[in-house]
Amino acid sequence: SLKCGIVGLPNVGKSTLFNALTRAGIEAANYPFCTIEPNVGIVEVPDPRLAQLAELIKPQKVQPAIVEFVDIAGLVAGASKGEGLGNQFLANIRETDAIVNVVRCFDDDNVVHVAGRVDPVADIETIGTELALADLATVEKAIARDGKKAKSGDKEAIRLVAVLEKVRAHLDQGLPARSLSLDADEVALLKPFCLLTIKPAMYVANVAEDGFDNNSHLDRLKALADKEGAPVVALCAAIESEIVELDDADKAEFLAEMGLEEPGLNRLIRAAYKLLGLQTYFTAGVKEVRAWTIHKGDTAPQAAGVIHTDFERGFIRAQTIAFDDFIACGGEAKAKEAGKMRAEGKEYVVQDGDVMNFLFNV
Ligand code: GDP
Image (cartoon, rainbow, N blue to C red; front, side, top):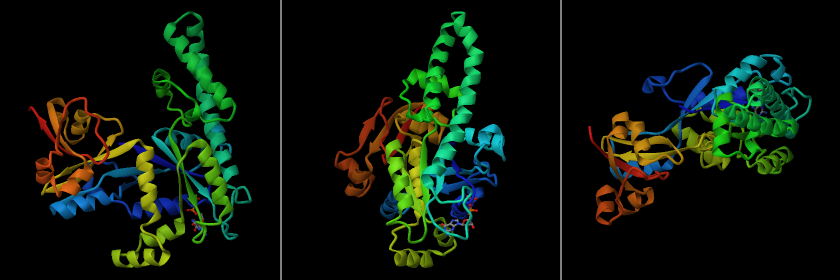
């Protein structure tokens, strides 16, 4: 399954955040297909639509979608040259599918900043530089290796070297590979290199309890992220780690006092799920109401395949009701009566929130 790597400079609040995520996370026993390691947190994706479906259907069980976070320690300036835990750090981040960059946006004289001052923009540059240098090394090695083949006229190698040189020029300007416009062929050519700066990225601004407004650190971070088109989630890791310890009643009271509708972690989890290019469709039966995870753009047979490979292989059609129609009509039977149940075929691109039944040959 797809994973988000949590990175950031030392002392920005990564562990505090990761621990809150794991405390909020699921019981490993319920997910036998997941390998649980100490640096992996598996959390349910908070989705209010599940509660709406459950209220209508009163199922025996409700099963949310999940998403995985990996705590990736060891990023320091010089990581790309193997400083600190540099090599391990780069290997770990290479295995993730998206990057959650935690940035310190709180002042606290008791918490040492590695560079001596709180400066989110400088921190992001430090991290960006390390990742870009690592990619540059990867790209240069590949150019050296395939350059000879390209010179001898190998068509495949010529195409590969051309795209690698394009990426090198971009990285040389200090820009991440993700901001380079590449066509689908070029993306496919680059895929085996697992470039770090091509992975989608977002920021978590770790702010003080009262740091959501009038916070110049946060404002500067947001301005930078805007330019990059990267999402930002502002939260206070210290508060989040307190919230996860509370039982439901205390949690509701605490959030109300803080003027919050939900924990900041919920916003983070949803943003990470989206960053990974994931979306949800539902199955809604009396036994179980369940959120299934698919990629944006997946077709109905691919969606069926997430439940069982047989469903994909023998796919005939999908009875589909848009989420809003399902709720507005008051369930499947009434949605069908109202003509809101569609029979969708192999080409149908599943929409977020679709409530689906699959018909298939065995
Ligand atoms: P990491 O090195 O990035 O994993 O950072 P930690 O999570 O270990 O946090 C470093 C220090 O900052 C610890 O002393 C935390 O208690 C403190 N810290 C973490 N989050 C916050 C926060 O939101 N506000 C404040 N004031 N301190 C925090």
